[in-house]
Each structure stands twice: as C-alpha cells, then as structure tokens.
Image (cartoon, rainbow, N blue to C red; front, side, top):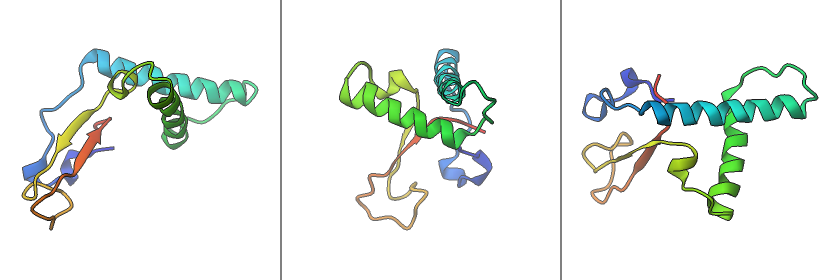
Length: 108
C-alpha cells in the first residue's frame, strides 16, 4: 500500500483518488476472494489477510485478463498508473532513460 508520508515531495500522490465505482470494484473483488477462501475452508472463519487475498486475486486476474481475455486489467481491478522520469523516480539514482511505472491500487 502507498503511504503518502513515505513518498518524496516531488512524487507525492496527494490529490489522486479512485472513483466510487473503482473503489467498489476493488472491494467487491477482494471480498469475493475472501469469500472463496472461506468457502474452500469448509465455511470456517478465515482471517482477513490482504496477502492471501492478493495472491488469489492475482491468480484469478491472470486467468480472466491474460488467458481468457474477458476484460482488461483496469476493468478487473482498477489502478492508477504513475510514469516516472529520471528526475522523479522514487528509485533514484536512476538512468536518464528511466521508464519505471508504478501501479497504485490502494491508498492509506
């Protein structure tokens, strides 16, 4: 997760946000992944763990988006894409041909 206080001022993401529809889609996908864990565990209570949820989400996304081509990555799990230059790259020092891209999926 991104924490704006940890980002250099020149790369700060304050002011960026997801639409309500994008946030609702992310919540729906995460809840569906957690529900799948619960069902597969025989209905036993499964602790909410975003690492487990993310692992399932990424596997399902690979099938739906990359293999079956049923929707785009953005449609499946919305994100904000940030393109960096050598001057703004959070991984500085960076080469003059910097092409780093960050996909932000959640804000804290």
